[in-house]
Every structure is written in structure tokens, then in C-alpha cells.
Image (cartoon, rainbow, N blue to C red):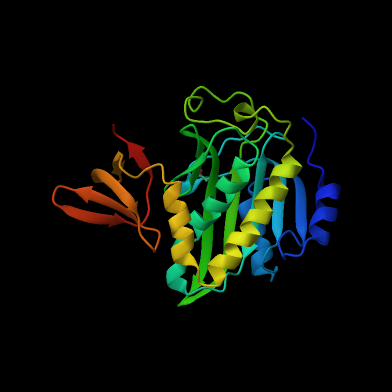
Amino acid sequence: MTPFDIASINKRFSEAEHSYGKPIFYLEETSSTNDEAAILARAGASHGTVVIADHQRKARGRGGKPWYSEPNTNLAFSLVLRPRVPITHLPAITLVMGLAVAEAVETFVDVPAGIKWPNDVLLRGRKVSGILVESSLSQDRCEYVIAGMGINVLQRSFPSAIEARATSIVLETHRTVTREEVLWQVIMRLALRLESFESGALPELMAEVAKRDEVRGRKVQVGDVQGVADGIDQSGELRVILTGRVQTVRAGEVTFVD
Ligand code: BTN
């Protein structure tokens, strides 16, 4: 697999109307693009700055779990965001990002893209992308948000531990696909969806997320809560029906138990 073509993508982003990918930093190798982006954010990097790497030595997912991705094959990048939204809307940002990734991925594949609360994008029930949002909050102010995305693009096989649960864009399409084109589409969709998020369209965005919700109606286990998933509320929390009552869950990993 060839290294990421940063020159062509740089040119495209510099001509785009939105403020994302300006600048975009490319690293052949790093520990984690989320860590690189956080360093840049603390040094004052602007909203929309992107860090992308061809290989991460210590990529992580939610809960500190390792994120596995074949070097030079997939997309691994992080955005510095300084979203102008009420702090109470921030927890929903992972789902807004997931919506944008699902919409972008869907333009390349032959199957619909679903969202598995809180941070996975699925094709035929298998994970094609994971999103790791890490925020720096000070009192009631958000200093910055780092939104890290791993998207499986050209990988054709996966380690046995995850092969039944993982997929990639190339495995779900008959079209030719490049990592540069996928990045372009994802950033375009993110720009649109984040603009709506900032202009107060959270109810409309959550309605779009609901159409792609792969968890609703399924029997789930999240931490020590077990019940039937009943959708996602406006603040991004998962509603779970237990015997006779509804409980909302703010964070956690969903396991299907049916
Ligand atoms: C998950 O599925 O739990 C989220 C996975 C997020 C992986 C991406 S790859 C780019 C960025 N850098 C990291 O270390 N993690 C995210």
C-alpha cells in the first residue's frame, strides 16, 4: 500500500470553502493522532486543524482499548475542534460525527451505514469506523475537543479476534476507492453536520442519527444495565427499558445479548 497522498489533499482542502483541514498535518508514524492533535490544540491550533498518520504505534479507542489498523491502508486522523455550542450539547458531538462518517462512507459502498451508540459506524452489522472524542473542559467552558477517527478503507483481512465484527469500505463495494477520496468526503460531511450542530439544529441531527440507530429495539448490556434499547435522547444518552422503567446511560460499551 502506498503512503497517503498529502500533496493532493492539501491542495483540495486549501481551495475548499469550509475551514476544515486548514491546516492538515501528515505524519508517517506517530503514537496517536489524538495526542498529536491535543498538543497542537494546547498550543492554540485553530478549529478544523487535522492530523493524519499512516501508522499509529499506540492508537486507542474508547475506554483505552487498543485500536488496530493496518499501516498505510486505512484512515486514522484527528480534528481539533472548538465548537460554539452550549456545553450541554457537547456529549452529542460523537453521534454528530458518527452521522457524518456514516453518510460519507455510504457514498462508496453498496449497503446502508448504521450507527451503533455511542461511537461506531457499521456496515452489515460490522464495524467500519470508530470515533474517539476527547474534550478539555475548564469549569463550564470547553477549551477544545479532539475528535479522532479510524476508518477501515482498504484493509481486506482482520485479526481473528475481530474478523467477525470488522469490515472495510473495499470489502463492501464494487467501486475503486482511495483513502484520499474517503477523507475528502468525510471532511465535507463533517463540515456540513458541524455547521448545523453549531447553528442549533441538534433535534434535526438526532432525528437523522435515529434513522441509522442499529441498537434500538435490541436487547443490550451496557455496564451493569441490561434491557431493551429504546433510542437515543437529545443529549446523546442511550435509553434502556428495564422491567417497568426507563434508564438513560451516558457512556459505555453496548453488547448485544440477543
Ligand atoms: C473506538 O472504536 O473505540 C474508537 C477508535 C478511534 C481510533 C482513532 S484512529 C485516530 C485516532 N487516534 C487514536 O489513537 N484513536 C483515534
